[in-house]
Image 1 (cartoon, rainbow over the protein chains, first blue to last red):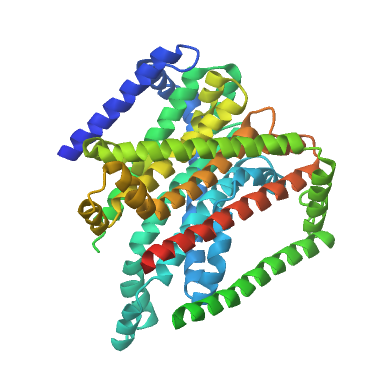
Image 2: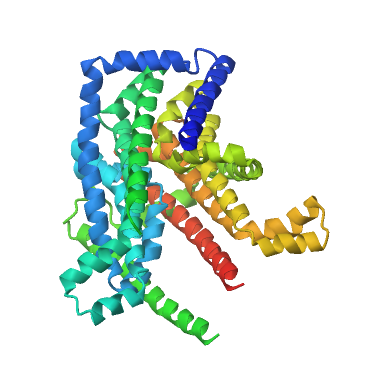
Length: 242
Length: 260
């Protein structure tokens, strides 16, 4: 109960800070919390907004499936062998901290404008953290667990299902949480550069028109969605028995 | 002792394999481009990218953009490290504030902060200030979180030792707290730098009038593949070199704390 109170206090604090910032910076810089909420409410009633949102959701859906499935598969593959894990980790970390926006023209030249480029760009952001987390989780399974499985004469199938999976699940979910938010960011940045549809495009076109209210409303909408998804995954992470 | 020597040998063996993997990938890429499997209109062969990068650096054509980007990255990293450290110390000192904003810190990186870049452009105008603002916004929270982690993990025995020596708070902060938290602070610096780099390049790409990100976007729009891939290689090499160097120091510091 106390935690819920804290969260309310935090939300109240953020809105208060926003309002004060609005009073300081004025109308041209940003809209007040109340105006933004009203504008967002209006936007939510238009078909245009939902068209863009559906486009983003579709690209994000594909990208997140590729990131999670591909990342887990790649992580398992690299993590099963100690040497391949140690060899690939620094390479993966270097790829992870690369400003991937730089590679965007390459993605566009390979995939052309449109859906596939957005999906590829989102997957590029999300795939690597999921791979790193999965690989590290598998490498860090305690040897005693493998020996136990061996002593109990479990089959490979049983070992994977009853030993390996529960041991790596928390790490994989932590990776999925990171992969989820980075994929969303990747898809949105992709839409900001080269797309005629989607919420990222909506923000960029509003930026061109100087339409601050729409920028703020869409950004708030995305933030609320991202925080809600993150909270859900955090809850899932805590709900798993260890 | 023997295990350390052993691990160093292993490392060098895996280091060689890693080098071989990277070289093989580059060579295969080069061959695919040279034999026309990947058309030149899509990707240049790596050797051409390197030649283009050499040309760019020799003629100094993009020096202004490169310096502008590096300056912005340095400014953002310095601001986020200083600000993040100060805020971290403040939040650590106020437990009530900390419990309240902990969820914010935990879910901060889930929010696509970058979507607020247009707002900064409206506030600061197109230019370095908007870029630095968004880069700081991206990287400061990593530094706050690392500062909190570092201060949390100061062994209690060190605090007790300080009390036995009757150190003043200032002396304890300088002689005990800061060195004990240093490895975590360094992780924060590493992350802040990586995020600042990403933030600066991405903002330059989306809307700005100068910088490497802008130059790449400009070259892309003008079908100038040579300069585009040369600059791309520059960013990749710079980011990889800086991050690898910081990561190596970070690992050394972490392993030292574990040994002690």
